[in-house]
Image 1 (cartoon, helix red, strand yellow):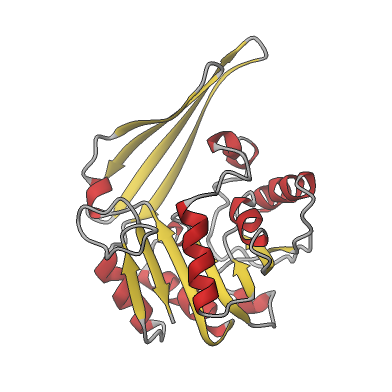
Image 2 (image 1 turned 135 degrees about the vertical axis):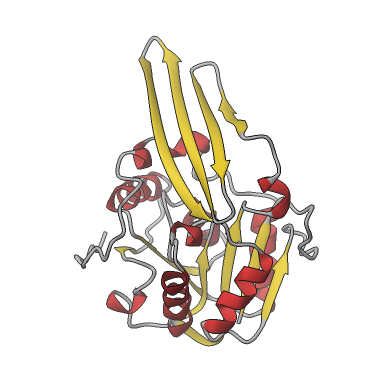
Length: 254
Protein backbone atom coordinates (compact mmCIF):
# COMPACT_ATOMS: atom_id res chain seq x y z
CA UNK A 1 0.00 0.00 0.00
CA UNK A 2 1.35 3.38 -1.02
CA UNK A 3 0.48 5.89 1.70
CA UNK A 4 0.96 9.65 1.50
CA UNK A 5 0.80 11.95 4.49
CA UNK A 6 -1.28 15.08 4.05
CA UNK A 7 -2.97 17.74 6.12
CA UNK A 8 -6.20 16.50 7.66
CA UNK A 9 -8.05 19.76 6.84
CA UNK A 10 -10.75 19.11 9.43
CA UNK A 11 -11.78 15.56 8.45
CA UNK A 12 -11.83 12.91 11.16
CA UNK A 13 -11.38 9.23 10.37
CA UNK A 14 -14.68 7.79 11.60
CA UNK A 15 -13.54 4.28 10.62
CA UNK A 16 -10.31 3.99 12.58
CA UNK A 17 -11.92 1.32 14.81
CA UNK A 18 -15.07 0.35 12.86
CA UNK A 19 -12.96 -0.71 9.85
CA UNK A 20 -11.80 -3.88 11.58
CA UNK A 21 -15.37 -5.15 12.06
CA UNK A 22 -16.92 -3.48 9.01
CA UNK A 23 -17.03 -6.68 6.96
CA UNK A 24 -19.57 -8.25 9.28
CA UNK A 25 -21.85 -6.84 6.55
CA UNK A 26 -20.59 -9.60 4.26
CA UNK A 27 -17.58 -11.10 2.53
CA UNK A 28 -15.53 -9.18 -0.04
CA UNK A 29 -16.89 -11.24 -2.93
CA UNK A 30 -20.59 -10.64 -2.15
CA UNK A 31 -21.18 -8.12 -4.96
CA UNK A 32 -22.80 -10.24 -7.62
CA UNK A 33 -26.05 -9.99 -9.55
CA UNK A 34 -27.72 -6.66 -10.34
CA UNK A 35 -24.98 -4.31 -9.14
CA UNK A 36 -22.21 -6.12 -10.96
CA UNK A 37 -24.32 -6.33 -14.13
CA UNK A 38 -25.03 -2.59 -13.91
CA UNK A 39 -21.34 -1.70 -13.87
CA UNK A 40 -20.41 -4.31 -16.46
CA UNK A 41 -23.01 -2.98 -18.92
CA UNK A 42 -22.34 0.70 -18.19
CA UNK A 43 -18.58 0.39 -18.55
CA UNK A 44 -18.84 -1.72 -21.70
CA UNK A 45 -21.16 0.88 -23.27
CA UNK A 46 -18.66 3.67 -22.55
CA UNK A 47 -15.52 1.62 -23.29
CA UNK A 48 -14.16 2.03 -19.76
CA UNK A 49 -10.92 0.21 -19.06
CA UNK A 50 -9.38 2.15 -16.12
CA UNK A 51 -11.27 2.83 -12.89
CA UNK A 52 -10.46 4.61 -9.63
CA UNK A 53 -12.59 3.74 -6.60
CA UNK A 54 -11.87 6.84 -4.52
CA UNK A 55 -13.68 5.62 -1.39
CA UNK A 56 -12.76 1.96 -1.60
CA UNK A 57 -13.29 1.03 2.05
CA UNK A 58 -12.42 -2.59 2.72
CA UNK A 59 -12.21 -3.43 -0.97
CA UNK A 60 -15.53 -5.04 -1.89
CA UNK A 61 -16.05 -2.98 -5.03
CA UNK A 62 -12.37 -3.24 -5.97
CA UNK A 63 -12.82 -7.00 -6.02
CA UNK A 64 -16.02 -6.71 -8.07
CA UNK A 65 -14.47 -4.35 -10.64
CA UNK A 66 -11.30 -6.41 -10.95
CA UNK A 67 -13.45 -9.42 -11.87
CA UNK A 68 -14.49 -7.46 -14.99
CA UNK A 69 -10.90 -7.39 -16.27
CA UNK A 70 -10.62 -3.65 -15.68
CA UNK A 71 -7.47 -1.88 -14.55
CA UNK A 72 -8.50 -0.87 -11.04
CA UNK A 73 -6.98 1.45 -8.43
CA UNK A 74 -8.28 2.13 -4.94
CA UNK A 75 -7.99 5.00 -2.51
CA UNK A 76 -9.57 5.93 0.79
CA UNK A 77 -9.20 8.58 3.47
CA UNK A 78 -9.06 5.94 6.22
CA UNK A 79 -5.74 4.17 6.80
CA UNK A 80 -7.59 1.51 8.79
CA UNK A 81 -9.96 0.79 5.91
CA UNK A 82 -7.00 0.48 3.55
CA UNK A 83 -5.27 -1.93 5.92
CA UNK A 84 -8.33 -4.19 5.88
CA UNK A 85 -8.70 -3.80 2.10
CA UNK A 86 -5.11 -4.88 1.57
CA UNK A 87 -5.66 -8.01 3.68
CA UNK A 88 -8.93 -8.81 1.89
CA UNK A 89 -7.45 -8.40 -1.56
CA UNK A 90 -4.32 -10.38 -0.73
CA UNK A 91 -6.51 -13.20 0.60
CA UNK A 92 -8.42 -13.12 -2.70
CA UNK A 93 -5.17 -13.13 -4.72
CA UNK A 94 -5.84 -9.63 -6.07
CA UNK A 95 -2.99 -7.18 -6.63
CA UNK A 96 -4.60 -3.74 -6.74
CA UNK A 97 -2.75 -0.47 -5.97
CA UNK A 98 -4.07 1.24 -2.83
CA UNK A 99 -3.43 4.84 -1.81
CA UNK A 100 -4.39 6.91 1.20
CA UNK A 101 -6.09 10.01 -0.17
CA UNK A 102 -8.76 12.57 0.65
CA UNK A 103 -11.14 12.55 -2.32
CA UNK A 104 -11.40 16.32 -2.13
CA UNK A 105 -7.76 16.47 -3.23
CA UNK A 106 -7.12 13.52 -5.56
CA UNK A 107 -4.47 15.55 -7.38
CA UNK A 108 -2.22 15.30 -4.32
CA UNK A 109 -1.79 11.58 -4.99
CA UNK A 110 -2.82 10.97 -8.60
CA UNK A 111 -1.35 12.55 -11.72
CA UNK A 112 -2.92 10.01 -14.11
CA UNK A 113 -6.42 10.12 -15.58
CA UNK A 114 -9.12 7.45 -15.47
CA UNK A 115 -11.96 6.38 -17.75
CA UNK A 116 -14.22 6.19 -14.70
CA UNK A 117 -14.17 7.19 -11.05
CA UNK A 118 -16.60 5.61 -8.60
CA UNK A 119 -17.55 6.91 -5.15
CA UNK A 120 -20.00 4.37 -3.76
CA UNK A 121 -22.11 3.30 -0.80
CA UNK A 122 -22.98 6.77 0.53
CA UNK A 123 -19.34 7.87 0.69
CA UNK A 124 -19.71 11.41 -0.70
CA UNK A 125 -22.27 12.52 1.97
CA UNK A 126 -19.58 12.16 4.64
CA UNK A 127 -18.81 15.72 3.53
CA UNK A 128 -21.15 18.19 5.20
CA UNK A 129 -20.76 21.49 3.38
CA UNK A 130 -21.53 22.53 -0.18
CA UNK A 131 -18.00 23.90 -0.52
CA UNK A 132 -16.44 20.54 0.37
CA UNK A 133 -18.85 18.62 -1.85
CA UNK A 134 -18.15 20.79 -4.88
CA UNK A 135 -14.41 20.65 -4.17
CA UNK A 136 -14.56 16.84 -4.13
CA UNK A 137 -16.62 16.62 -7.32
CA UNK A 138 -14.28 19.05 -9.11
CA UNK A 139 -11.30 16.96 -7.98
CA UNK A 140 -12.92 13.80 -9.35
CA UNK A 141 -13.77 15.52 -12.64
CA UNK A 142 -10.18 16.74 -13.00
CA UNK A 143 -8.90 13.16 -12.86
CA UNK A 144 -11.24 11.86 -15.57
CA UNK A 145 -10.30 11.33 -19.19
CA UNK A 146 -12.34 13.21 -21.78
CA UNK A 147 -15.92 11.87 -21.67
CA UNK A 148 -15.03 9.93 -18.52
CA UNK A 149 -17.73 8.74 -16.12
CA UNK A 150 -18.32 9.54 -12.47
CA UNK A 151 -20.60 7.07 -10.65
CA UNK A 152 -22.04 7.81 -7.21
CA UNK A 153 -24.34 5.49 -5.25
CA UNK A 154 -26.22 6.05 -2.01
CA UNK A 155 -28.91 4.47 0.08
CA UNK A 156 -30.26 7.88 1.08
CA UNK A 157 -33.51 8.30 -0.86
CA UNK A 158 -36.88 9.96 -0.28
CA UNK A 159 -38.35 6.52 0.41
CA UNK A 160 -35.63 5.30 2.77
CA UNK A 161 -35.75 8.50 4.82
CA UNK A 162 -39.40 7.68 5.60
CA UNK A 163 -38.70 4.20 6.99
CA UNK A 164 -38.80 3.30 10.72
CA UNK A 165 -35.70 4.49 12.59
CA UNK A 166 -34.56 1.05 13.79
CA UNK A 167 -33.26 -1.52 11.32
CA UNK A 168 -31.62 -4.89 11.97
CA UNK A 169 -29.12 -5.23 9.12
CA UNK A 170 -27.25 -8.36 10.29
CA UNK A 171 -28.73 -11.03 12.55
CA UNK A 172 -26.64 -14.16 13.01
CA UNK A 173 -26.40 -16.64 15.83
CA UNK A 174 -23.17 -15.04 17.03
CA UNK A 175 -23.58 -11.41 15.94
CA UNK A 176 -26.20 -8.71 15.35
CA UNK A 177 -25.81 -5.27 13.77
CA UNK A 178 -28.57 -2.72 14.34
CA UNK A 179 -28.97 0.73 12.78
CA UNK A 180 -30.69 3.38 14.88
CA UNK A 181 -31.36 6.40 12.64
CA UNK A 182 -32.23 9.98 13.43
CA UNK A 183 -32.43 12.92 11.08
CA UNK A 184 -33.35 16.52 10.54
CA UNK A 185 -33.78 18.42 7.28
CA UNK A 186 -30.04 18.46 6.59
CA UNK A 187 -28.35 15.44 8.19
CA UNK A 188 -28.98 11.80 9.01
CA UNK A 189 -27.09 10.16 11.84
CA UNK A 190 -26.81 6.38 11.87
CA UNK A 191 -25.89 4.86 15.21
CA UNK A 192 -24.39 1.47 14.38
CA UNK A 193 -24.81 -0.96 17.26
CA UNK A 194 -22.68 -4.12 17.05
CA UNK A 195 -23.66 -6.92 19.43
CA UNK A 196 -21.35 -9.93 19.68
CA UNK A 197 -22.87 -12.85 21.56
CA UNK A 198 -20.81 -16.02 21.36
CA UNK A 199 -18.48 -17.85 23.76
CA UNK A 200 -15.53 -16.51 21.74
CA UNK A 201 -16.57 -12.86 21.76
CA UNK A 202 -18.95 -11.03 24.06
CA UNK A 203 -18.97 -7.26 23.56
CA UNK A 204 -21.03 -4.34 22.35
CA UNK A 205 -19.74 -1.48 20.22
CA UNK A 206 -21.32 1.69 18.86
CA UNK A 207 -20.20 3.77 15.88
CA UNK A 208 -21.92 6.99 14.84
CA UNK A 209 -21.87 8.06 11.18
CA UNK A 210 -23.32 11.41 10.10
CA UNK A 211 -24.38 11.84 6.46
CA UNK A 212 -25.47 15.01 4.74
CA UNK A 213 -28.84 14.36 3.13
CA UNK A 214 -28.34 14.77 -0.63
CA UNK A 215 -31.19 13.81 -2.94
CA UNK A 216 -31.64 13.87 -6.70
CA UNK A 217 -32.06 17.59 -7.32
CA UNK A 218 -29.24 18.44 -4.94
CA UNK A 219 -26.92 16.08 -6.85
CA UNK A 220 -27.83 17.77 -10.11
CA UNK A 221 -27.03 21.22 -8.69
CA UNK A 222 -23.74 20.11 -7.13
CA UNK A 223 -22.59 18.36 -10.28
CA UNK A 224 -23.48 21.38 -12.41
CA UNK A 225 -21.40 23.59 -10.10
CA UNK A 226 -18.52 21.12 -10.44
CA UNK A 227 -18.64 21.37 -14.24
CA UNK A 228 -20.38 18.13 -15.24
CA UNK A 229 -22.56 18.53 -18.33
CA UNK A 230 -24.57 15.32 -18.45
CA UNK A 231 -26.21 13.75 -15.39
CA UNK A 232 -28.42 10.65 -15.22
CA UNK A 233 -30.03 9.53 -11.97
CA UNK A 234 -31.40 6.00 -11.57
CA UNK A 235 -33.46 4.43 -8.81
CA UNK A 236 -32.13 0.89 -9.20
CA UNK A 237 -29.46 -1.15 -10.98
CA UNK A 238 -31.89 -1.85 -13.84
CA UNK A 239 -31.51 1.85 -14.75
CA UNK A 240 -35.11 2.78 -14.04
CA UNK A 241 -35.46 6.53 -13.41
CA UNK A 242 -35.23 7.70 -9.82
CA UNK A 243 -38.50 8.63 -8.12
CA UNK A 244 -39.72 9.09 -4.56
CA UNK A 245 -40.34 5.35 -4.14
CA UNK A 246 -36.79 4.35 -5.14
CA UNK A 247 -34.68 2.50 -2.59
CA UNK A 248 -31.39 3.46 -4.27
CA UNK A 249 -30.03 6.63 -5.80
CA UNK A 250 -27.43 6.06 -8.52
CA UNK A 251 -25.78 8.98 -10.29
CA UNK A 252 -23.88 8.70 -13.58
CA UNK A 253 -22.24 11.97 -14.66
CA UNK A 254 -19.99 13.06 -17.54
